[in-house]
Image 1: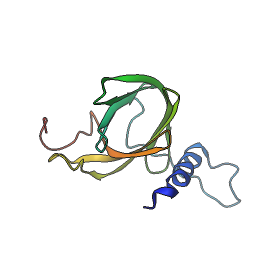
Image 2: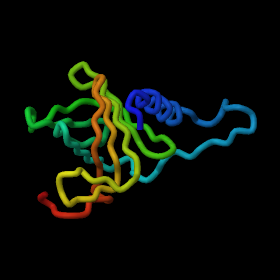
Image 3: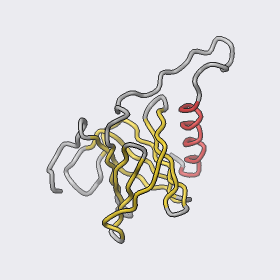
Length: 144
């Protein structure tokens, strides 16, 4: 994927998530929102280069780095698109926009396989990673 197109793709996910189908062009059918992750589930995410991670649930998210191992907590809004979910908020003044989409994912550093990919736009920086939930865990060693 060409990274300069990511903001456009993220915008399309957002528009798809916010569109209820009514008011679309005549004859257009509504697309069901993604329901593979229940609204009450905690979504965990992790990435490398640079190392980052955290979790989101109940309108709050955490974001951790090696420089901030305890993480920062902040409010987020969750939305469902047609092929995943997203979380949007502000982390220390920077926009935090994350999409979680189904698909086998490897962090490249362990023997784990995750059920979701995570794409994060933090301010103007894109970060790629993997995600899982408590009911849909990663496979592989508990401690990489």
